[in-house]
Length: 504
Image 1 (tube, rainbow, N blue to C red):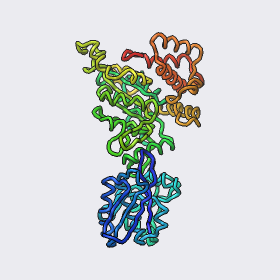
Image 2 (image 1 turned 90 degrees about the vertical axis):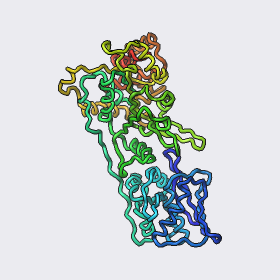
Image 3 (image 1 turned 30 degrees about the vertical axis):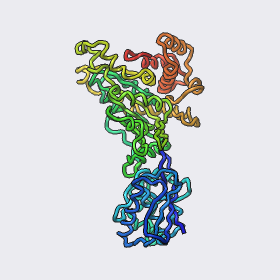
Image 4 (image 1 turned 180 degrees about the vertical axis):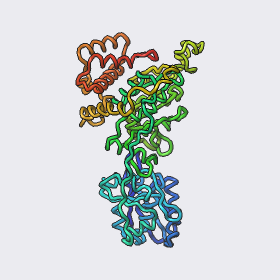
């Protein structure tokens, strides 16, 4: 008779149920695993054999066949160890078959039978809950999986504990969810001396989830401003925290099973490859754009990134999702992130400084910022020139609003948007508004419309640029608590659109 256990295979952030079938039949002694296993799954037979031997359980001198169904789905990862062992134990009548069939299992086995934490426990628990099954996993992964409240999660430290639990000798208590953390760090916006316009742009960007580009000389404070962005962002909503944590779970980034309410802040180095930024590699893993989902992707030295990497950002910025296409896998990941880019005005960095600029003016700046294509630059809602700070300003005491003050205004604006877009699916902030909804919420008054029309005709705004100005103007109005977009809101939005660094 065939014994069955259940586990999952991952396709992006989705976990698909896999049935692990075990048959022990007469014949030449063998232990084979079929059903498109990768190398790690194929090696499970040696880890299972050793783990059972460590507990004094000898395999029968018969033919053992493990089938992973559906057979045409690729199976990857070491988390298949535990379900294979459980199916084998059920086939040997060591544990009750009905108990094993009612659970989803995942976990890696050590040679001594202890269980090692694996990635993807959170999406696996969600799949188990949808199938109305319990879940058994390593104790180190239990706190993460227990966040799915409608799934009973059992965390075990070893295969011996799993056997004792299913045979009723020593039942295990359900795992408890990990800690909820909200930590914005110790960096405060008040630490930034001067740069009031850049601070204002940062507040607008945070309030509406707008993309922003900082251009300035070395040491003017671009990176310092970006590093303080998490301190003014509102905490993740429960839904956003779950979405973000599922992606981080697949990448093994959840610390001790805790879910963070702090928005992710990813800052890849400019030498990062396309697979690292967009996703891919072995198993088509999520890239930085997906790891920054519902948070911030900060790309310092923006023009130094490879041109191919920069151009692949265009589609994720527009759609909020990325398709990682490989010969054997097409995986879709969410990536609704806020892009913050920082760049020097030219290669030497001192193009605006008449005392230090190089002799290649203006070619130096045109060649350097020219690495950023027009279509990509057109996707930045706010473009801010960050001038150098004088030494006298550096000696002044901290002034301006603290991060807590700005965060309160940002949260109030986000609450307005949450109520506005309630029930509209993927549209959660002003940056997501489009079509008829954008026209309804961001149509300016008569004076504002006339101003925007003149600017569009005079500077040749693209249709995308026109709509992005409207979105920013709507966010500025939300920060003021205004119901309608008026001329001052449009004027400020336009001022962040038209700069000397690029065309409109």
